[in-house]
Length: 190
Image (cartoon, rainbow, N blue to C red; front, side, top):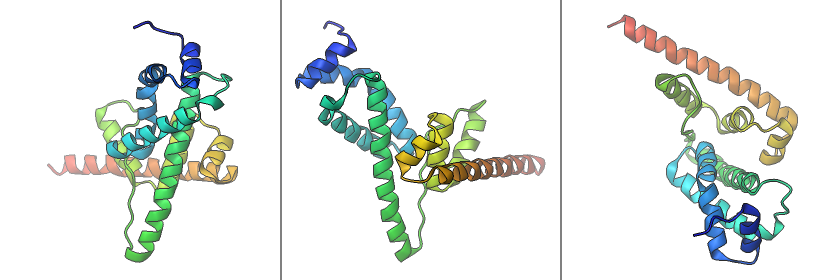
């Protein structure tokens, strides 16, 4: 198999060539899955979201103008797809919650931290953050989105994005501190 340039593959995908689509998929599938997994917090949901993102990307391939790299373009589609589906699911959960009082929170896969124990502590703290806080925190601090981009992605005001980020960071710090205190207390009692 010849390794074609991305520009050639995109042109061939525009023409509907399945082999070009497959090669584009193979080059970028890992990155797409990683970003939707981080947003979804669940392997099965992430697989569905990644599949939806790729279907959307190939349906919209003729809209790709080459103003950015294909990987950047498909990454944006993946984030948009995941956030749209997660917002829809949150609305359904809110409706269900109004009937049964339950609350469900996602579970990010990992968080960059010093060591494995610290990652587990941060991951558990992230699981306890409200969905909106976690999404804004992740998009800003990990994915590098601006508040303007987050606002557009999530359908919220820039001020709301800034406020949720500040609240998410404060809550995350508090949860991590509580977790560390529990470890120290537990260790002292043994």
